[in-house]
Image 1 (cartoon, rainbow, N blue to C red):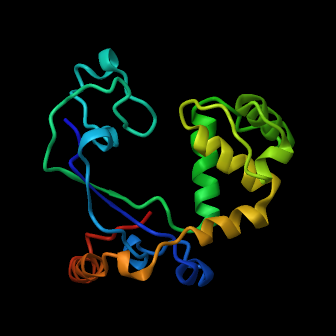
Image 2: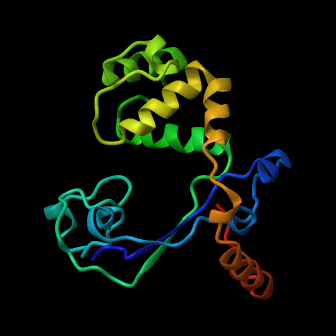
Length: 189
């Protein structure tokens, strides 16, 4: 069945600047809860373990086969957008897991492989060129840009923050209250 709702986080310069590597996810601002219907319904999918290899599941739990499935009332906390350096680390893991690069590649070897995959050039990366589309190509672009033009990429990362009015502060406050009350509920990333 398809996950019906998503609660995502925003990166926070303030939290990241304080060097709080193990900051609870509740330290970060939250987006408004998103109902996942229509095309967005393939965002995340929970699979029957007996059928997972028949239908195919990709790295992020997305509905690879684009099956209709059943819309559910299940929600997912999707808190991977936090600090720039975490985003770079997580993106490298995803690009490596797809076997686009190797964990033992130097930065230059990884860049060469990613640029070949994307069908562009180093100049295109830092200047907003057009690239091939393939599974997780956005992660390949982000990681390659982080290696090649890190200052520009980090500035773009922070510049994409939405207005404060779009944050779900009430739910974050609720999660902080729960976290403070029940030590077993420590939502760390």
